[in-house]
Length: 186
View: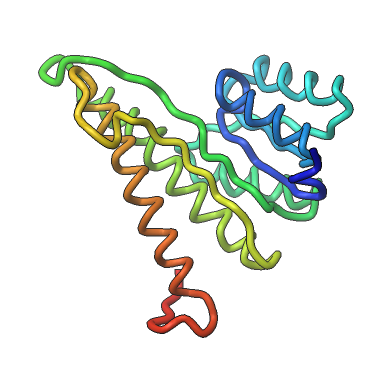
């Protein structure tokens, strides 16, 4: 208990499933939690559960594929809690379709939520964390992003993209540390 005491955490897709579990656990560990989701009803349920257990939480409606909504979430988090220490990029959709039967619209929507949403979260959260002296970004992927799974070409492609993007950003963050040879900005 208390491993996240005094921290501020944003969890996308915090209204259900893994996202809700992350919100509840972070609150148990002392974090003030900002649960974001496209479903106001589910997001508010998560916040209510946290509050019933003595935690502090805020719900914000959020489409992770929209950059202006990321800016709003970070602004409201800063105004309410003074910054961000943890980002859990959890929001995602699961689309299993035969490749030849998938529309371009379905593909673009999957990539917008599962990949662009993660990119935007890191893009807007990392500078805010840097200002506070550091933080943690946790990006959810899947075993489907590690190896081929029958019928998962679309979903697997999105989760593979998240996996490699996360590694690349981590390497850049390490290289940006003062005194690191080859120091380059993120």
